[in-house]
Amino acid sequence: MSLLLDIQHVTKRFASPVTLGDRLAGIVRGRPARRLVHAVNDVSLTMPRGEVLGLVGESGCGKSTLGRVIAGIYEPTTGEVLFDGAPVMRGGRKRTPRVQMIHQDPFASLDPRMKVAETVGEGPIAHGIVPRAGSDDYVAGMLDRVGLNPALRNRFPHQFSGGQRQRVAIARALAMKPDLLVLDEPVASLDVSIQAQVLNLFLDLRRDLGLTGVFISHDLGVVRHVSDRVAIMYLGRVVELAPTPLIYAAPAHPYTRALLDSVPRIGQGRGVFRPIRGEIPSPLAPPPGCHFHPRCPHAGPRCRAEVPLLKPVVPGQAAACHLHDGGVGLGVAGALAAEQRPAA
Ligand SMILES: Nc1ncnc2c1ncn2[C@@H]1O[C@H](COP(=O)(O)OP(=O)(O)O)[C@@H](O)[C@H]1O
Ligand code: SF4
Ligand SMILES: [Mg+2]
Image 1 (cartoon, rainbow, N blue to C red):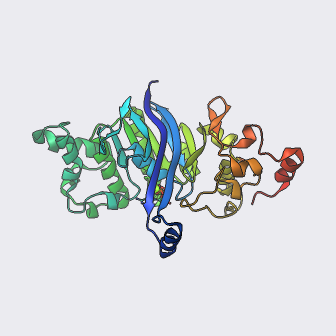
Image 2 (image 1 turned 45 degrees about the vertical axis):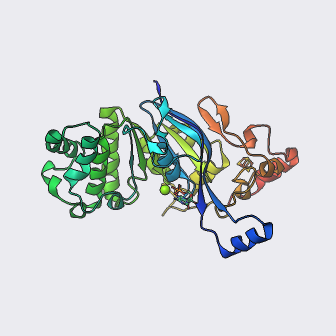
Image 3 (image 1 turned 30 degrees about the vertical axis):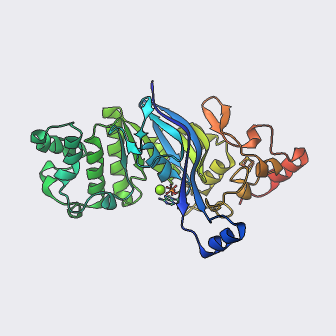
């Protein structure tokens, strides 16, 4: 399998609104106040053609931002995204229609004033994928492909249900003949009964069209069914990357373990969530060293001082944790004490 996506040391920071306190601190320090959100922090990973990668983490950890950088919607602050060997963006502009993104809320992502025929047809005409004269048949074919009646193509988004709108959004993306789809929580806004239908549509399309996909979700259960590999994000960094079965059977990072523990299991009555202890720190001021150390039951002195790099643990599985790389700096007694501390 050849490489389709190559993400090289991508960082994305946003300027955040400055508070009065920041301004006063700026005056005292003699330089203007600046607050930076570290949304994505030095992420590198590659994807072969045909793979589906699940991107998982709690809200605010940078999944959508990384998805948007991959899809050429945001330019990275530093680093680069190569798609099929060439940068996905150049001079602040997306270079290729072959990467398409599907957003969480199809109502917000579809123009309410445009009929479905225009929504699905305008991009392919603009990119010369189909001549204007052939657009009607092309759109009808796309709607049929995603399980919508082509006769509905003169309707507006509000005339569809949530699940149908997400199908329209998928048809619009497919109409651009993409090789890579970035799906940002594509079923999170849908009723549970509709979620499985849309996931099955994605699996059918993947099989029939050989699509490569980045599937973003905060739900480890959803990702398990659709992904070949899973990347776990925490505060802007990828902390574990592994084939899907290994993530669930033998998680290598304490955060992955905590995420799995927080998922209610079948057979535990009404499903008991064990929330991960502590709050997610602010991406405005992430903790030094390992970002997870304030919440980690194994944290030692090294964790507070040194950023753990994403390194192979076993072939195919990588984790960013000092436990796999010479320890956390506690010595044997300290490590044993940390083991005995409750995880939540
Ligand atoms: N356009 C933006 N401007 C400023 N901050 C942003 C912007 N987009 C995202 N962020 C911030 O970046 C962090 C990561 O956000 P996001 O990528 O949306 O996370 P997720 O999708 O995992 O919930 C959050 O703290 C969020 O508030
Ligand atoms: S590096 Fe240290 S704090 Fe971070 S996850 Fe590993 S043991 Fe926990
Ligand atoms: Mg998001």
